[in-house]
Length: 190
Ligand SMILES: CC(C)(COP(=O)(O)OP(=O)(O)OC[C@H]1O[C@@H](n2cnc3c(N)ncnc32)[C@H](O)[C@@H]1OP(=O)(O)O)[C@@H](O)C(=O)NCCC(=O)NCCS
Image (spheres, rainbow, N blue to C red):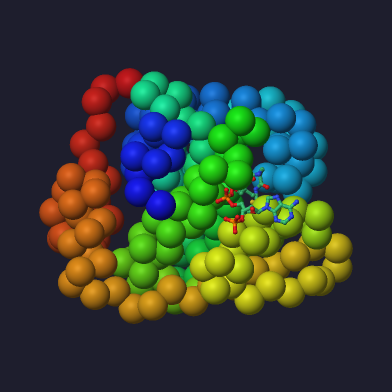
């Protein structure tokens, strides 16, 4: 889906200086959305701490920005270190923005970020009743397995190409070398 089709929002990388905007998005998730995102009911404090942890490590976060606020996000967390081949992904789309192709578009962006960083295996977990997440993952070729009350998805992004690197660099307004080495953008003072 084109970005302009996403109810007017724009998907882009979320920078460390925007972690409070990211936190506010997670705090706006409905009780059902929180349960689906985190696999159980979680407190506001848990979300505060999660948002702080996300930007303290090597995670890559994309957000759907609706002018100021973030309405949806995708997180990619390297498993076992930034240079390992596996990363875990998680998604959050506010209720009013669901079923409009946002989750599908976010997974597409995360898959491109993964391939450009040498991640050959993306894993995700969701509740068995989360048919939306399963549908989004299946559309991107995920293998789904039902185990011990959860659904585990695995996607193998293809290897990077000059075009995939160039596209990310263009979308993020940075150079190809910065994408390759994932150099953080210089953020405005907080
Ligand atoms: C799961 C989630 C990320 C999906 O995002 P989304 O923007 O709603 O997804 P999309 O609109 O791209 O796609 C949803 C798909 O599910 C389908 N769908 C919706 N309700 C459905 C249902 N009851 N049965 C089957 N399919 C259904 C839609 O038709 C669509 O498929 P299509 O594009 O083939 O028509 C989002 O709903 C969400 O954030 N939920 C709360 C948090 C969460 O569940 N996170 C996942 C675990 S980390």
